[in-house]
Length: 336
Image (cartoon, rainbow, N blue to C red; front, side, top):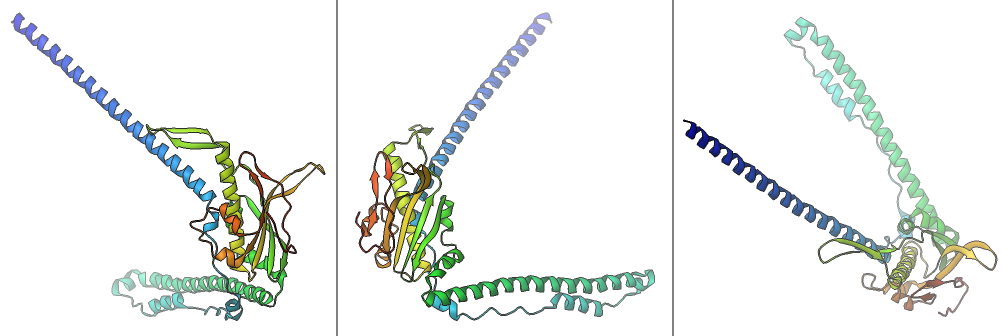
């Protein structure tokens, strides 16, 4: 009996050891799988980060590809005003029908439910009348907004068609022509306008728009960052500025009946000759509508496309833009 007891004890201990080893192997397997999952998650996050970075870089140099729709001021001046909204009564009518159609039953009269139900239906008529009034007031508000817009466009259109260049700025503001450009921290303002030409000044307010670091994936799928090469940095900056110039000109040609758009782009810097900060121009382009319309905006290189227009620019691959005099509408010939 003692021998059997010892054998049973040894078998129990051996089984416990085996179970412990199985548990340890299972735990090690779980840890291995978790490490693989973590590595895969890290690779996915790194790939997403690189994709976002590359999309942002592509966005910087493709601002010109998404110009606004053409504004037909002739059609807008002839457009009929929006009709005023009718005053509806559908909610009150439906509630009134329910009240008139109510017939109390035996138990309703027995327990007095008919009076309560009648009061509820009468309240429904009042609520329906209030709902009709609320809908009418909202429709009236929308009508007034639409009428104001119709009247403003008709007024601006009549001035533009009459050759009133002072309406150009109002038309661009109403069309929100430079809203997307503003999202890139570049402010646009009209500096001069004539019936056939408009001049604009663009101020780049964010000098850190171009990333200072490059984001890439290693061969093993890990995320790595390193300082962006100076030549690549300035090449991206050049293409972004030229892309913005193309976009500004395109928005002008879409909204205004001008054949020329002068775009001067710069940033506020210290003028060492006077000791004050002022807007220093570093790209000036004289765009012509016919030449601009011939561009294949999806395929052009923004900086290369500047050769299609008279422009001023002094640019070095290692240091970027240098100040230049802006272009004015009275210049007949512009040399680079």
